[in-house]
Image 1: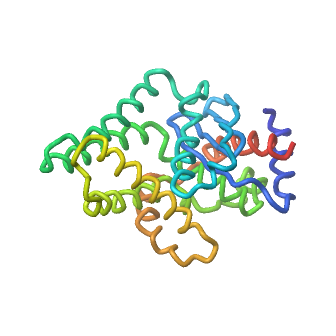
Image 2: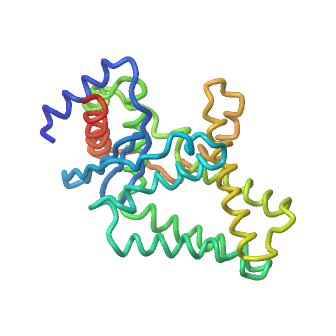
Length: 261
């Protein structure tokens, strides 16, 4: 997208009373931005890939617990289907890691925690390789600029919204760990069979999503639960340069252009 057109989209978005809620994901070579309907992947070499998010049934999407799992699956759509976002080998790696994480329940109890920690370290090293840490901060900054209607000023570098985000996946992971531990301790059939362990894992993810939604409530009653995740973002983000922020803003502009169009 030409720069003049891109900044025009950002300026138009700044004038809107309301905008679609945005999320995102940092990659080693770019930033993915998603809304409920669209996604865009802007790369550090100036490339732009666009697509549509999967449509969720309106009735099913309102069922507690189920809606959280559907939202999680939907958030992975750009990685799973997006051309240019993840290559074939990366998708295989993600699928394998996902399968291994569930198979940990088959290990003896004394090995389960060390294996889970080793897998977590491996995934984090893969996820945050290259320039991902700065681009992760840029993703948060661009989304915050959209929420504050300061996109144009953010593009010029006149303002620099926070690189920390209350809706970051790091916050979700910080909530998921204790919820999973509690579920495994309280569920009477946990560990009885592979099927039961998988059910407990899915239930823990679904409960975490419901808790995560509650934490985001404007009342702020549960906002304190975000503190561990926000603290972890000091490790999972770095202060982005203006060029990094503009990569994220290019993806934001792509999504908002289609939302507002």
